[in-house]
Length: 143
Image (cartoon, rainbow, N blue to C red):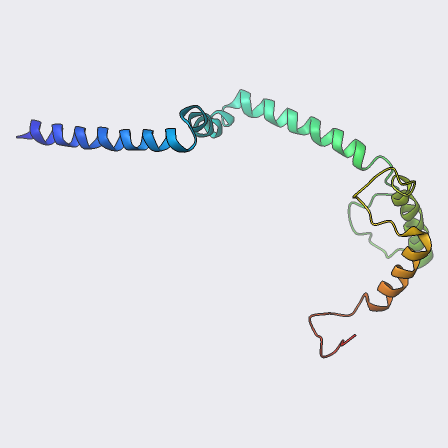
């Protein structure tokens, strides 16, 4: 009697495995399924993890070299004492000029809306008038 139960359970298991295999073949394909199933496990192996971490560190260093190449006086933490307004405005002016350096000549498209300096100064003044208003409180700030 146990052999019949074992046979039935084996057939049910085989049928279920067959259905799952057909589903995999119809949707993602066996190779892709095996790859996506095995990859997280492979990434946990110490030599693979070490290689990935070294690659990520290299990419991070390369990106930091490009993204922060011109950054003046980077601030990694809040200063113990506040920065004087004049010094802060001077730093912001340097950074403002730096930000314009790579796109203002018109060689980059799609990154920045460029409406000529006069128009951008005008938009900055308008924005400055409303910078501290909260649009979520329309009854307090109807403009």
